[in-house]
Amino acid sequence: MYWDSKTLKKRARDVLTGHYWEYFLAVVIAGILCGSVTRFSIRINLNQYHFRSLSEVFSFILQWIYSHYPTFLSSLAVSGAGKTLWKIFIGNPFEIGSSRYRTVASYRKYDFQNIFFPFADGRYLHSVVTLLLRDLYLILWSLLLVIPGIIKSYSYFMVPYILAENPGISRERAFEISKRATSGEKLNMFLLDMSFIGWYLLGTLCLGVGVLFVVPYHSAAHAELYGALRFKAARENICGPSEIGSELFRA
Image (cartoon, rainbow, N blue to C red; front, side, top):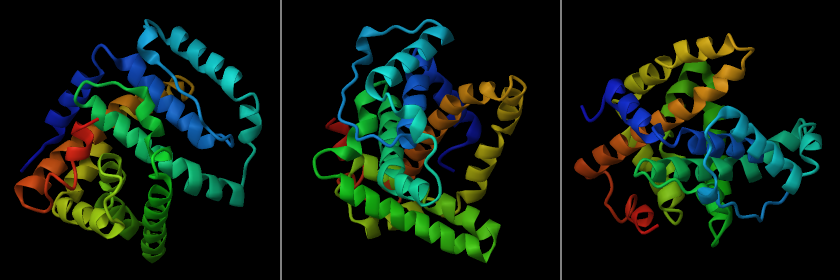
């Protein structure tokens, strides 16, 4: 076996140590951007910030929203078809951006700009179409019953991470690598996610706000899981370094 939950969670804690607020901020901002209806073309340099407390993080978030997105609150009213379109054209690319941020952070490089990665250099359309197909596949599998949809969600787990490392990879190859690398791993992946339930339940005791503080930990564990599955893919000749990994290491 290439990984176990205990080891991945320890690695996730190591990634967060000393950089929790930066990681937290990136995850929260990515969520905010997924819910906004504004075109994004800004740059943020976090190197000048040193967050020491929760109040400083929230203060930064509020100032950033008010400075760049005065219509942010109105964007929360988007519903129905608008939400679907937003997920397709904005939410999904930011999922890839978040995956890149977290993958790079696994190597102790905390670059906030990575969440905007899919929106530059001709990567956007490929990102949109690939994750749209993933979502359609999941919807179709879920129509059969809930369990097949859950199983397939783990089969496609690596797709946004693969695109985050190699945005030029073909859709077919990204799905193939993910399905083959997660073969035989789905139950353990499910158990890894279930191991966070206690943390989420504890977070709900603080009026639900505490749940936010579990998300970086869970997200970091997912990034470590991807790293382990990528290692498996390389060892078992499922893919080569030119397909996933090499692009990231040039960043």
